[in-house]
Image 1 (cartoon, one colour):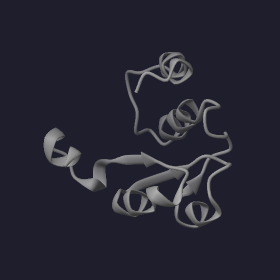
Image 2 (tube, one colour):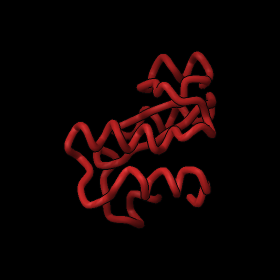
Image 3 (cartoon, helix red, strand yellow):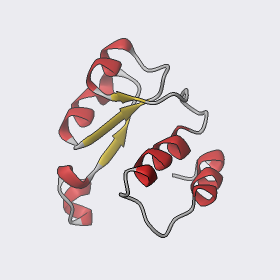
Length: 88
């Protein structure tokens, strides 16, 4: 539904999840990530981050994409501010 609403494909999406209820969406997108303290079944299918849930996971994810060259015109400081304030 969200892909249709934003006119993107699952191949253009990122999903971060930590519980077994997230597995279906983690498999559906190109970039599936989970925090370090995710359920073991989730860690088997997603790329595990070093951060724990609620501990700047999104900022770490941003750095991953920044290094990969997939993010432009956004600073890590902007992402960390949003991540700390959990305004998603």
